[in-house]
Image (cartoon, rainbow, N blue to C red; front, top):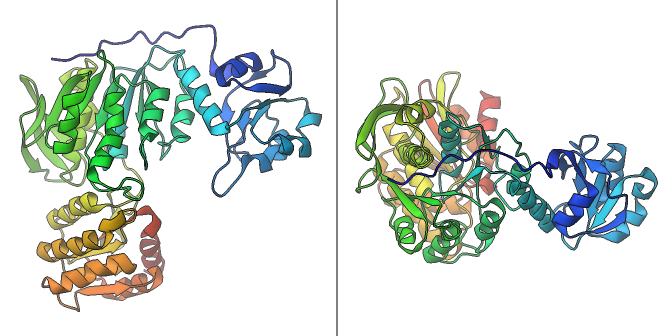
Length: 481
């Protein structure tokens, strides 16, 4: 049995971000003071001038579509305590010099934000749990936080703040009352999770699964495996890796790490397992949760059998942190509705499964299985958009998707987009009729068809990559309904 002992949650009193000063900021980010006195204070951090609060520190972040330096005057009007910049010419063009606020120059404001977050995290004796994986990161993060907060005051990633900017912003919310933090770690290229782990210093690392995604920069599954594995590689001998025993790519990573290991799974032997799995009479699943030599019955109020794996990862994390089986059960028996991630909603007389947040081949297969198992008195519509960032495999992946959709026997397959259309063609070649498969080149046309085609009690599952914006079809359908 592997247990990470409870931390004290004590904070070193020499510095607290929420009430800090310029002198400490300069030390944390290695910046150059252009204006201000070392004793000037700030409370909190913002990268958005629209939501900036008086007294906060404003970081001028430069992105693909915006440049925070353009909003320096807004920061002055909102009474920012200070600004962190990388473009000194913008400072001269702004009202900052007349406002009496401090200004710090750094080569890269994103790197400075990360450094400040890392500095802040180091002031706390806090258990950080890092969560990554191709699918299920957000849901698993929610489940882990629900379990961990049963025993420890817990901070968690909100929304999709899981990248090189979002994770630092989450850690900057740490307070003396927190004893644990559950942070989601997303990535699209090698080295990104390594950097996030360097900032967060996780004591527990969770990899949900590994499959095809983000294959523009990461060309092969081995590349994806290595990039996700950066989380496990960051763990020390005193840390714990939560390992999916049913995922060969995750399990292989565990053979080469220093950390303690707790495995979870359904099919293969594991420290934490689900057995006697059965659909609940109402909603979700019931199963027996086995943790080493102990067992307890659990109700999981989530749609989709794949969510049992997410629950097992959460249970394994709870066990690693010394949380009792009873509290783990209580934490899992809470429904966490995440927008556009497997939401089951009734719109008038039809049922909608909204899973439009993102998609890749593995998550599409899981979604199709969910629709197949969903109980309804009406017909079943699979409504899909393009799966993006699949690199050279994009055509074959969509063709395979169409073949699998045909095998599931859905009443209709509706596609939007050129790549999704390949799935439609493959579904017809695999046995679905042309009346069952409708391919559209616009969201509006798809919504118009569904408006006339759907009948009471029909069930529609919507899914596609974020860039496919399949929620637009759903919104169009509901407006017309």
